Image (cartoon, rainbow, N blue to C red):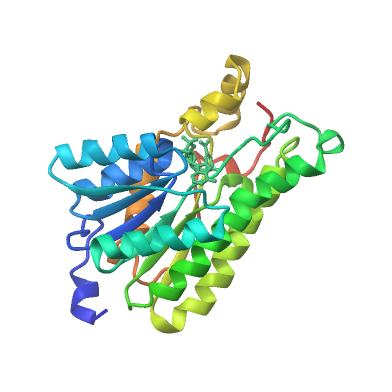
Length: 271
Ligand SMILES: NC(=O)c1ccc[n+]([C@@H]2O[C@H](COP(=O)([O-])OP(=O)(O)OC[C@H]3O[C@@H](n4cnc5c(N)ncnc54)[C@H](O)[C@@H]3O)[C@@H](O)[C@H]2O)c1
């Protein structure tokens, strides 16, 4: 990227850029897709839930944007490779990726299960998606996305920055996402390819609502210093900025967007 391009960049400068977004059919991925598409980006929307991704793509196209839906299970390497091939075939080149697909429950495990009661199969199932899936996306993206100015953003979590009781598999998988972000950033930096992560706190998405009782939801609100849940659109602002050239001097950073959750105090973790 030239100095002039850097100096003229704003957070809304997505025109002419194309991004791959995983987990784009719902919640935070959907909000980021709508946000960057409205700012001029072409988006390849990948999700295990193809119908969800297709619905978001239809909304973007109806609003005059450019979007294509892809089906992927990020824990399957062949599918990840195909997803990236398909996205490149659609847009010619990718200027960034938002690696966001993830799960909060696996098998019998959900937040609220003591570590001593968690089955190894359920622990592995969570790592398989949240950690191995992210690794596979980074591996194949960094093989093809070699152009200077490329920006990759991973979705880690506040649970990647601090421990939370009764959430061991999720906490472990998201700490790994933070570590993967730092390692990948260092390898890609010589090519001016940037890798950062966002670390959302409790955010009002289908994932959170599916895993929290009414009491659990209120406890999450109470444990957040700003006294409310985050909205996907608030997370999308920071992800969009990290994808854009406006954040050109940032790489290897893991940014909390959490209403103050990780600033101190106590966390509840359990739903
Ligand atoms: N909601 C929160 O409070 C919160 C907080 C911190 C981090 N996160 C993280 O944000 C990301 C998005 O979560 P969300 O809250 O928007 O949840 P969501 O359930 O609304 O969206 C997640 C999307 O990922 C897709 N997905 C799941 N497994 C997949 C796989 N193996 N391959 C491809 N797609 C897959 C789902 O189909 C879904 O569309 C996740 O990584 C999650 O861990 C969420």
